[in-house]
Length: 91
Image (cartoon, rainbow, N blue to C red; front, top):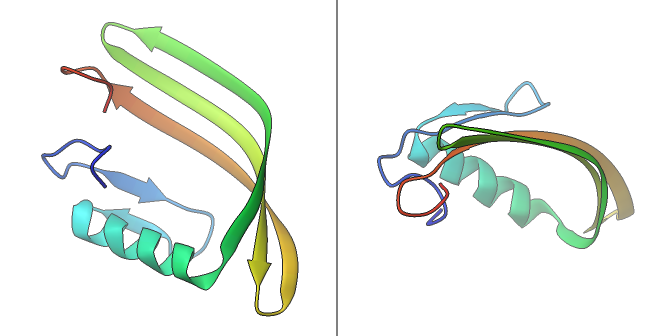
């Protein structure tokens, strides 16, 4: 979580019905839950777009994550959109 804004102002909107979180504690809970359920074996990066303006950047990325689960390997398509701001570093 140290890569995020230390103020705790962060939101995540995931694809699952139970993946809507606001604030650092909720986002931390989501990440811990998701990463405890499976181990990523490979990231396959696809389309992306980056827009930079006035100390802010919007990064959009498509990728496929290959996961090892108790039931075997699965692939999960992901679309990420991240907004970053530059303070002393990109957050």
